[in-house]
Picture 1: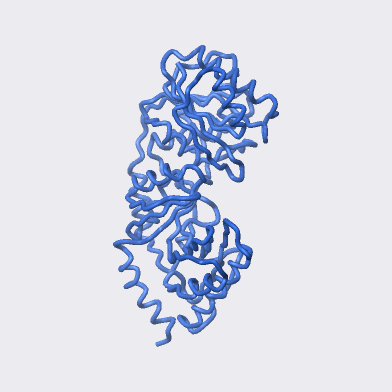
Picture 2: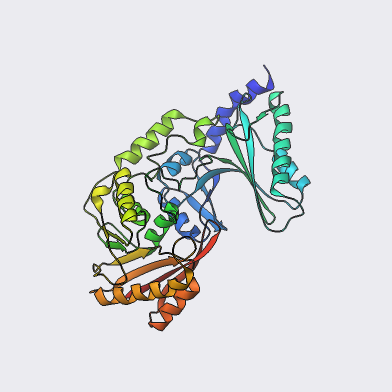
Length: 397
């Protein structure tokens, strides 16, 4: 019997050994790691730490099935194979060379997805090359043959991330398409908010299905749709047809079907007070289309209007991602837009309203708040793609 066959036969024992406690990390937007940690804890994870858009946790090995289906504020779920200190390419090679290859079959192809943050005398591409060579060398010993490389459509994607001197080697169970790409968008707004961040804002607001929620500049409706999905317990991964874990050597179709059935069994429709306004009729129609595509059209009420001067409903929570002047609008007009909106909101608020306002024009908005003597409850930075923004939380009324 060859070494490859022995490797496959022993795989089950190794996987069983990992069931009790397996190291993972999840990626998320930089700035909502604490929210993502709570998201994972609610699903059963034991969170250990978070930093720089990553949450480190432990959970039973099959946890990735459940997390990929149900995690709302997460981009990817990664099985953490090795974590070590590394300052050189040689150290990276040695760490990668020590990997056990129970996650891949000899006939499968792999790719390395490298990423680097910090100052290093080498590039991300060099990290990818070195880790790839280490895996090939390990496969020669484990299987008696070289693993194939396929950068475009690999069976297994190996994450190799160097964050300063912190080396992470792990198996991406999600795939190249992040969990935040829900799949319900029939209409694409030119400045759409990341759904994982939208879900994080909802959690930060303290919203629950009994609360009224308004997005006065709702764009394509992402915040409202995410609230409806949360309020009805709809799995955010429902529209996804493929995950990276389905091609891994230890994929168990029975466990995956069980995870999906358990998630679907939690869906429960109830009346929700989710209200949206947008000035653009095109966006209003698009938001309604997206809500219908997500199956929550009945839960959301969206109308055309101008939140700076039209009557506004009195609600408990306002969450909005207004124009920044980067993709939509002009930056010099943002301070006026923000100020006019706040003045109108104060005019119509009949009860204390909690407001969450995220913007890339945070200096202008901070001045608007100060001029109206609205004290902050909370403020934090959140990175949207490559764009630094700030979230402001305060009360009106």
